[in-house]
Image (cartoon, rainbow, N blue to C red; front, side, top):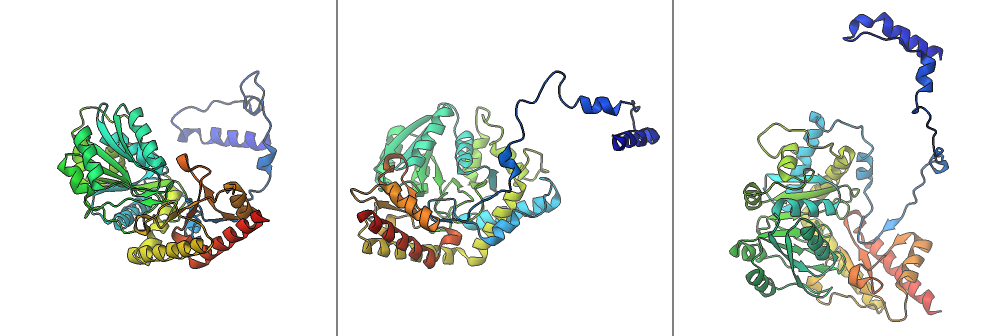
Length: 424
């Protein structure tokens, strides 16, 4: 009480330094008025928050997130900066350069959205499509389903061409869809994490442009794991996620817009429905245009630090080595699974996503018994299926920091032990 009184007296003593007169307030009344008059707290401080935070260490060999390298974790603990401080905008510039390298693009509108891969999906739809516009969705897994849902929520029209999980689209199939539906946008998933496929992209950008459509590509679950050339393949909008091969926490989504995509946004007849995902505002905040940076939103400062380190790690390693390492580890996994008598969902090796492998659950085996065994005995994550493949497959992720032969061999050992224990 005395300290409060002394503080108030100090304010009175230096009152001439303030623009407004100081009014003496009884400190007892200050303390009494800390809650609204007549109101009582309806809950007590949670006992769970009175204990130290305890997070177990697990090997995340599912479809993501993957384990973060020590340098990425350390980056997240660095001092906080303001989201427009020059030291932070310099880091943002470095992140932009890192994304351009990872995407193999020179697009000026290249930045990271505050949010997971779903945020990048929402941003793509909000900026590229107006109400009534038609999007052709190539759906061979859950991400085509999600994108179609977002398109419809935007007031646009989602026309789907569908193939089975584990299969990919041919240029002929997509061209038929282009001719029939006349879309302004075509969506494909480069690395389908629900099915384990890798969609061939060469020639697709040119095909879309032939029919005056933009090409939107999801690379969340494959960036850094397989060759990808945004500019050379004429991709108009490419997005990814931070928590897969890049090995950063799930919080930021790299994205890049071609000049053709920017022209489409500039020629809109209607206002972009989302302020938060408005690419014009985001590009300015990230310093992608010639104007001074404006406050758009409070950037995810420490998450951007972590993304920067994930991109730095990829740059230091080199894309070619990263691609080669993921190919080698995935092939080691395929060989080991074959020895265990397990069958892969994607038959053709060149159509497999090296970062996420889908394995058919043998008849008579409960998929969850195996994943539970792995977690209980080894603290290793092996995931089940999504969408149409729920309960039918296991999914094993080989991504970034976890892309090491010893991790692959451990997963194979765990799978073998689990299956053997279920036969007893």
